[in-house]
Amino acid sequence: MKCLNCDGEQLELRNTHFTPLIKGEQVEVIVPAFVCTNCQTPLMDGEQMNYLRRSAADKYRKLHNLLTSEE
Image 1 (cartoon, rainbow, N blue to C red):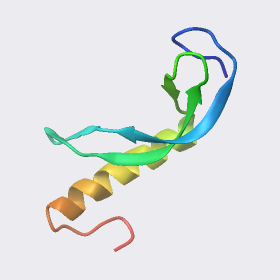
Image 2: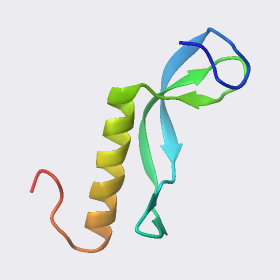
Image 3: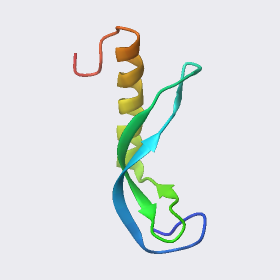
C-alpha cells in the first residue's frame, strides 16, 4: 500500500483518533489504522474501515442509550 498523500511506502500500524459524523453528530473513536511514516497521513484497508464504521456506530448508540452491535 502506498500513501495517497506523498506516495510514501513506509506505513506502520497505530491506534489513530478519528471523529466520524453519525446522523449529523461527530463521535470520537480510536481505531487501528496504517499511518505513513513520512507525512503521518492515516490510511485504512477495507477491514479497518468496517471496524471504524462499527466502532463509530456503537459509540453513537452508547451516547444515546441505545443497544450496541453486541447487545
